[in-house]
Image (cartoon, rainbow, N blue to C red; front, side):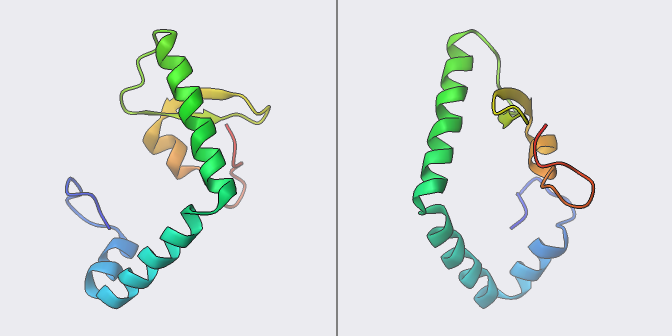
Length: 94
């Protein structure tokens, strides 16, 4: 659902607010999806990259560790990283 900061929730957030059963189904699916071993491994890898960047003194407030096309990581604004999902002509990686 939309974050509390969102003044105007987007289409899917409005849908889930109006349809609690649909939202429960989404949460159940997300729970199973995120429990997959490959998802756990990906989260762990991103966490290690973030930890390493912090140890090197990088300020990561409001930033994600984004995977580049060569497989390495780079800090990127969270909103930009999460908006790039590989739809249309947009690539999945930075």
